[in-house]
Image (cartoon, rainbow, N blue to C red):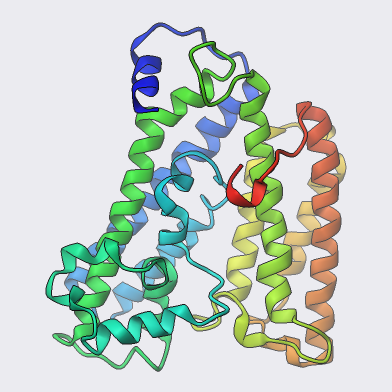
Amino acid sequence: MRLMTLALLTLPLPALADDAVDRVLNDYAVPHVATFAEATAGLAQAAEADCTPGSADLVSAWNGAMDAWLGVQDLRFGPLEQGSRRQAIAYWPDVDGHRPRALSRILTGQDPVLDKPETFPGQPISARGLYAVEAMLFDPDFNTYAAGDPGCVLVRAMTQDLAASAAAVQEAWQSDFVTVMRTAGNKRNARFLDASEARQVVFTALLTSMQFDIDERLGLPLGTFDRPRPKRAEGRLSDRSQRNLALSLAGHRDLMVALVPDPADAARSYADFDRVIGLAEGLDDPDFSGVDDPAGRFRLEALQTALIALRADVHAELGETLTVTMGLNSLDGD
């Protein structure tokens, strides 16, 4: 595969006459990946300066990296899906409780990784990435460490690993995958055999991410009427459940606009996105603990219902405009 990619970069190839793919690359993928790499590099620098959970700069840098992630999460193909990078960056949900066990094992000295932080990338994905850092900064079971404690060593290793993963994704996009997408359908392109396949993989990724919001970001804390599960909400520890969902929806909308920039070509989808984002921003429920209250649960259920309808409209309207259907194995990044 690497040799094939190098050949694509060195041999003259016809330009791809696909405006949708060009917009996705120029307006969405490349700038958002660069922003994420910059944000995670800043997080690692903040941890190096002060790795304690009381550091306002560290907490701010983590929030910035989390915000930036929600702008690239829709890229469920290519570099982000290679080598389990997505899971290493953002392992969630963790419904079986792997993360606290993995962190406890490291912090109690059962794993020698803290003596050799450079080996940290070999740790289980539950102990890596944005949500592991969140646990170290906000979970009362882990955020009582001081400067010089094992927790500080661990946070520095985590943030350096995260920055390295983000940098690797950015490098892979810039050096390889932009060319692979732009040359979809060229006879030397073994990844996209037809020009429409590049559009299809983006379309599929968008719909898959929207389903993730429905099933996980909303579905997990909603649980059932008799048994809501607010503790399963994403970002509960950092009071970011509502913010994560709102930013996720905004990212989906940005990707839709890159694919189909004229509202006349997707009128229902444009209108529905504005409505759903407005519902998310107006929840006044930072950690989704409102699912325990009938009125709060009703608002989350109404948002989930509206998001289901929005996804159906995006599927129908964008699929017709782009002349593609949803690809197979979408939950695995196509």
